[in-house]
Length: 276
Image (cartoon, rainbow, N blue to C red; front, side, top):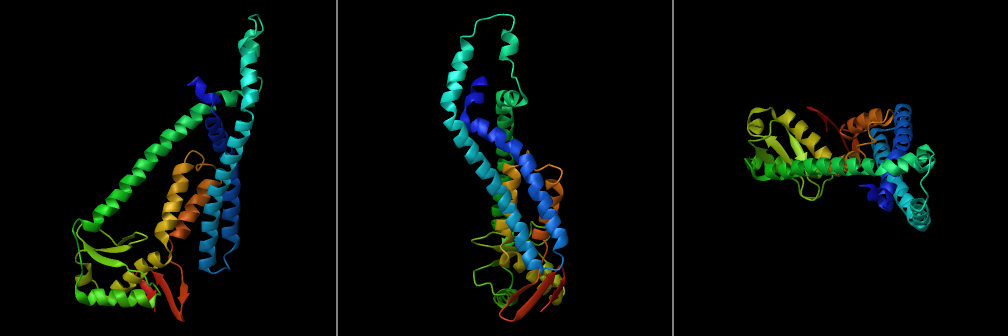
């Protein structure tokens, strides 16, 4: 384990995680303040702004890691010389104090590999959990799913084209889900609980379908993957004081329906409340 403390990428990752504490706090604070002061902007721009801050979090930490890795790599020869000098030091009464790190930075350099190991374990567990969720979504595509009747297929296609969505979106009735579910980017699918299309009023069903299609239009599935990736990669730093409220605000904004415009057709989709 002690040998890990001299591996460049391990040291770089440990320092990156420490720097992420203040970096994410700063970005989260700015994003939260911007969101509170941008109430006059339309929801589309606020949505894009929150996505920008999410990408900025990943970019800043990635840049920090690469820069530190290069710096540790360039300093490798100097570190080896220092280690060799320490190994030939004569024992004496001051040996213990001399081998003890003389500063907080030295102590961190000697123990950062434990932080990196903990980060790797956490990332692995969270990634496996996310992969299990992905497999479950693929399971929902086939288990207990069937095509609705022709009337709703035609109506669904009309709503989809009216919103300006040109790619294929599949509508299925599912005996597994308890509520509407929309997922997929290359092959998006909208799952409606079995029996809803036959028992709900048509106007409420159209409002519901428009709400789910709005997620496809905004490509929310990819945004959620981005948000999940940032949470997984930076899970050890995402609990900082300023980043936690920003993360909650970001999740709320990125999942909130917003108005959009397409070929002079205006849609404002909310849960069971849609104007066409």
